Every structure is written in structure tokens, then in C-alpha cells.
Length: 189
Image (cartoon, rainbow, N blue to C red; front, side, top):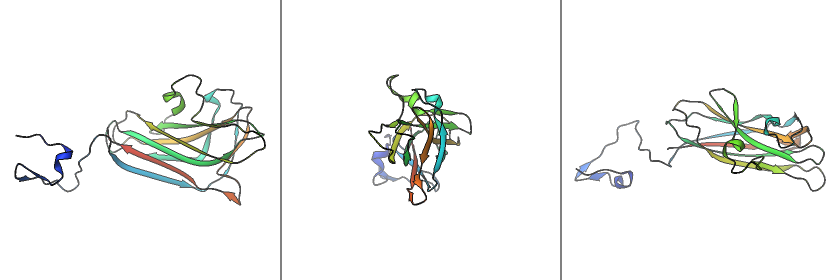
């Protein structure tokens, strides 16, 4: 008897036998993307933020900047990618994090979960060299939430500004808006 691997199924014939995969079943290999969810938003607005001062707890949730995915397999990894425009208040430094919620529970920051040093204080930051300017932030991570199939995961953008104030997201007025793109991919473990 020979062992079968995904790589040996190319012609579906093994030892002169034909392998038939029943309808509704899939062959899933570790590292394979098994589903992709994309969420788009054209919303824009402002949110008030407290003074950041290198304290991730002060970041504020950005409305409508989230993507949800429900894994089909146990212990899958989730690749999250988000791109959006924003503007910090009064020439301040701005800070961005992705946070994860499991089944509607509290949010856990990806910066704190995955940073390699305590000096890392955001997934993306913008430090103005003069004048307020709208800029694009692109944040991404591969998360290992360790959850069972059927668990609802929400990944949401959180932002802050060094001295606090109002952060603008999604474009700074009705004539200067951009599409926010949020993608989550389940990767089989």
C-alpha cells in the first residue's frame, strides 16, 4: 500500500486505481488559502481620540473599517490586509493598529500580540514634517487566533494621535474620498 500526498494526485491515478473525490469535499493542504473575504467602504468622517503618548489602550475604533471572516477549519491562520486614507489633527503623529474580536468579544491588538520589541507602538504610523496632509495607511498581518471552525472573527482598525484631538478617516471631505479596502484570507494550518 502506498501513501498518498496532495502532490501525488495530479493525474488522480495511483497504483492503477482512480481516486474519486466525493461531491462537496475538498483536498486542503497546510498553507493553502481556503477562503477570501473582501469588504469595501466609502464611508468617511472623524473620530475623537485621547492623547496617545505611546499607550495603545488610548486608540479609538474607526467606524465601518472592519472585515469579518468565519474560518472553515480549526486553527487556521488569518491574513488581514487593510488600506485606507486618514489625516491626523494639528500636525501630530498618528498611529494605527488592527484589533481582533472573537465572537463579538473584546478586541485584542495585533501590535501588542506580534511586536518583536516593546518600543514598537503601532502597525503603521505617520509623522508629519509640516502641514496637515491626508495620507494612505496600509496595514497587514498574518494572525494565528487558535479558534475552531465556525468562530466569527472581526478585524477592525483603531487609530490615535499623539496629543489627541480628531482623526479623519476615509477622506477629508465629500469631494476627497477614497475607497477603504479590507481583506481577510483563511490559510489552512
